[in-house]
Image (cartoon, rainbow, N blue to C red; front, side, top):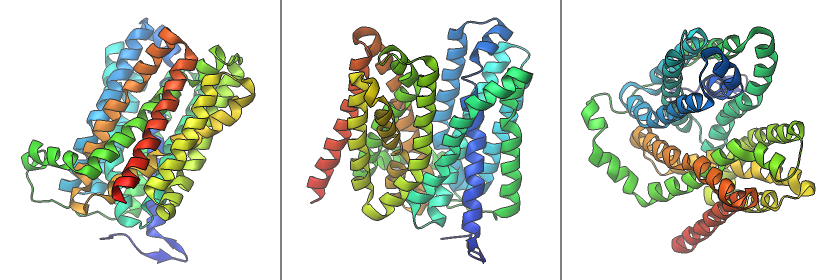
Length: 395
């Protein structure tokens, strides 16, 4: 039931909510993404190895994945708006901690806190959008533009601000964005009522109830599909520039330009994919995106410089599947289950999908880039076949 619905000259409070959440998602994702470009400066500042920084980043992403379920459960207990505000405050605090870290241990601890804040944010925000918008796919896709915009902006900010003021000021940029989003949320979005205000935390985290949620056929298959999409997406973000340089023979500058194009295409395609899934259906849209993925990754695996640009465009289209598969999950959850159910779903597919970087990196070492990215094409082919199987079973 909607708690937000006033209309002002064609602009509704729902649109204000969505706009605030796009900015919020930019704020929580910006600092996560901008750490990558400043790694060399962090290594020099703290006199540590790249492996040490990589371990700290792994801690951030693990904390991000493990915070998904608590974020959803807390939203069920206390209401989405309050949990989102806590998440934004935690993100701003972690960003300040990164910028002011006197030693590498403190830097690593701030990274973990950043992962917690960003992880707690997403599920309450998505659950509230799903409740307020009938076109769930379009709303979720538009919301995710904030994260994609952060992916495009972070390297540019790191290059411009970092060169002039250093890495500490660079990472600090995310803090005022998160705080501004929190202020706008307080001013423009009313308090949202919790779905299970009387439930104890023990009941909310009951393993039996969570296992029952995950065992539902709809949840089980959607988690499988989301895991495949995440597997390909993380591997692509980690290794596409290296593939374009080592397998296609592009110079660094061209490879980085195509990498930025990937983010740009995904950002543009996600709202459209959500809109299309609201009309065509979730599985039909996923099938189209999986087909684009098969074609794109086969071309990338082939190593043709001529096909590299259209292949990146197709890969970007396939990576826009995330809002579609997330909307598919929300479709199968009752309102009272959306917090815990969506949080559990996100925790599982993020943790399992994170193996994509290790698997593809190892495949590249053992068999070359063509085989490694051919594997990603095979993953999308598996998703396409599974969707056809679901279609046949459902009649």
